[in-house]
Length: 87
Image (tube, rainbow, N blue to C red; front, side, top):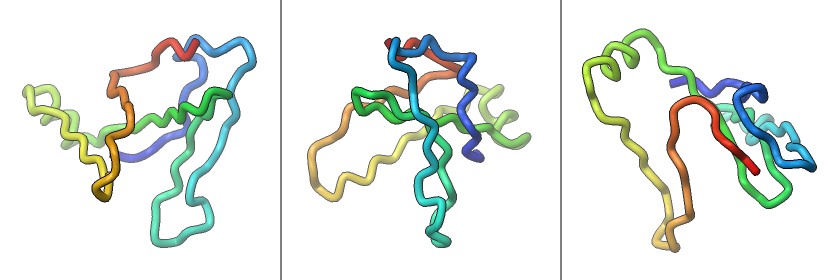
């Protein structure tokens, strides 16, 4: 999957809005992650599946999430399709 700039139109935004950010933009060892950041600390990214991934998804293959916690506590996350309410 490829990270894409989140489509703001797919979200019900908080009243004070969001800030568009790019994580690791100047770190060549990482893929730049365009994201939206809310004032309460949530970071929202969107990912576009490629043609092969779409075939797998359409055939019912599960989505896998790996969290690198380095033995720290799990962070609250949400995995959704499309947009969502950010209020």
